[in-house]
Length: 236
Image (cartoon, rainbow, N blue to C red; front, side):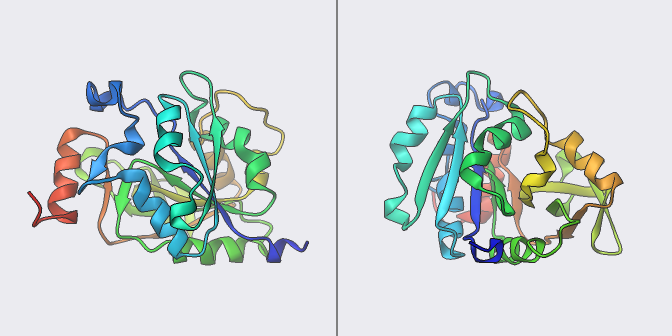
């Protein structure tokens, strides 16, 4: 099958422990924390389904059995959910992706942090994944956002509205498209993603864009409250 005809897949990262949400996350995995009465991770599944992504891989470590029990096989959203269980403590972002590569295939795939909330349309990522299939030099597309108060120094920059650079005033949104070749030669282990991305940036293999809409890294109780104030202002 030609790579251009292979359906686009997505991975939702859901293996984090969520220490800043303790004691709540002592019994509830962070991706199942609710925003406006719905688990965070379900927003991502719904949006991926709406964008035509039918195969979703979810990694998990802490209380992963509860994630599987809550989401099942994805039938109620019209998608197929596959799980990639990690050892206690997880494998970090890149390690988790490397373990899941047999499920993700050889074409560019979407990667979504399970603990972010936004009104971003995933169709943009689908378009980028399609474009990357015919752009062999591109290993990653990162969606960036204006840096929030809790990350004022930013993560990356953007040159000529396209090329992502190592330093700048933008924050990585946790929404991206990655090509499997970013991980060539790496074996499953505890591996962070940022160093791999920064190395690829030096080779000018990482592009990106900026999303100006509502986005929240739901990493603390305070940010959860702030997110709900925007997402469901009329609910009590």
